[in-house]
Every structure is written in structure tokens, then in C-alpha cells.
Image (cartoon, rainbow, N blue to C red; front, side, top):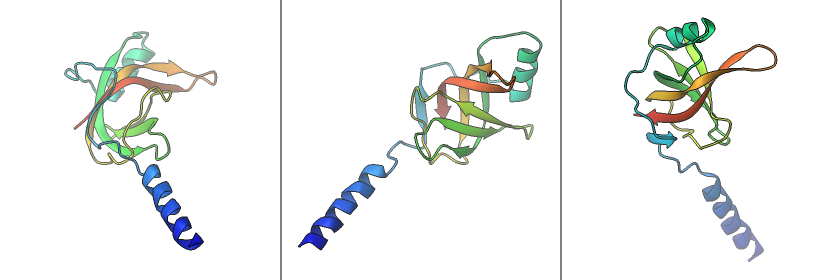
Length: 124
């Protein structure tokens, strides 16, 4: 009897850990996902002093498997970049290979490294 109860409890735990976030859709703040620019162009603009909000697009290469708090994109020009949402919303962990557009801005950490902080993502 104890073995059956353990097996049932284990199945419930596995089901609770499964990522039920759909692989496509809108996540985070809503935004108009048109007019996306290349990541390299957005970064060049940021480095030139134009600190603004950007829409950048690419194909999802990897994603956070724990809390859905980051994605890596590969842009059309071959560049790869990291998208972080500071755990403000959950992004799917099963979206590898999907095309996506992220809206956000660049931030520089105390070591001088630049990353893209997103407020919203649309995954096709």
C-alpha cells in the first residue's frame, strides 16, 4: 500500500513540474511587434548613445529550463544574443526553433557587460 501511495505522489510531482507554458504567443507586456530591427543595428545604436526601446527579432536557440526567465536568439545576420526578463514573466522553455520578437532596452551591468532586458516577447 505504501508503495502505491508513493507511486501516486511521485506522478503528481512529475505532473506539477511539467512546463505547461505554450511554445508560442505573447508573453509579458503587450507591444506592436512590427518594425523589428537587427540586433547588431540596435546594439550599434545603443553604443552610439541612442538609449531607447527596441524591437529585435530572431530564432530562439535556447531557453531557461527552470523558470522561463531568459532566451537566446539567433538573428538573421548570424549573431546570437541573450534576452533576459528579470523574472517579471514566464517564457516557454519549449520554444527552440520558433521565430520571435522581443521588445525592450539594453542595460549595462557593473562589469560593463551589455544585455537586452525585455518587457515583452511575441513567439510565432
